[in-house]
Image (tube, rainbow, N blue to C red; front, side, top):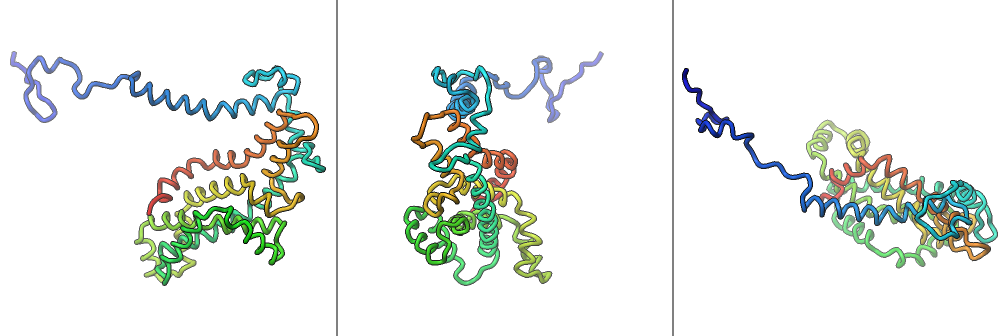
Length: 312
């Protein structure tokens, strides 16, 4: 009976012992290794560090004050109650007003929605023009926008107060809408400009050859291809505007305070007994809107950042 030669993939004859020595290739890594222990251990510690305060806030908001006074902040509630949430929303007092966060919530909605729409719409057009239309002075205009993105807000507070007073918008919701729209445009323009610059230039040139103008290219080509960066801008703007306290307390009055100012007044109230469960519930309610938006559109946010939000 003739011997059968054993060949490898390249056709080279191998020794007979090599044919039965097991699988070829690098030795598989061990699942439990020093590197994995360090990496996953670090991630676990970081997760606990950031999630522990959230856990304390949630369990405290579901307890009654007698149980809170026992002193064990990490213990689960013996009797779950949603009364602190109801009180935080509807009846918590901020000075003379005892309507909770409800009024501040709707004020924040009326501020956030038009501010986000205006700032993103204007910034997207600015970024599109800077990326695809080489007009005279474009580089200077872009430099001014970038500088504006890093000017401390505190420097501009008093001049803006004067401007809003002169145009009759100081203390109104629309005055705050104007402020947020203006301050949101520089960083959003940078994001849109970098994203549009990362898109294939051939699409823009082909549309120009076909006779498409500024708005037709923007609405028919750029906008449909730019959903991820619109989501990035949406999350940044909603988070920044909804969580803003400084502009809200400076440019509005008590009847138009946004939710964050109402929250500050509830938490720092010195009247009566300190209700920690109501304070925790009020804090969680205030942060729900940005969290919900991020969890719904988180994947598109990552896509937008990776696709061009940080490209030059």
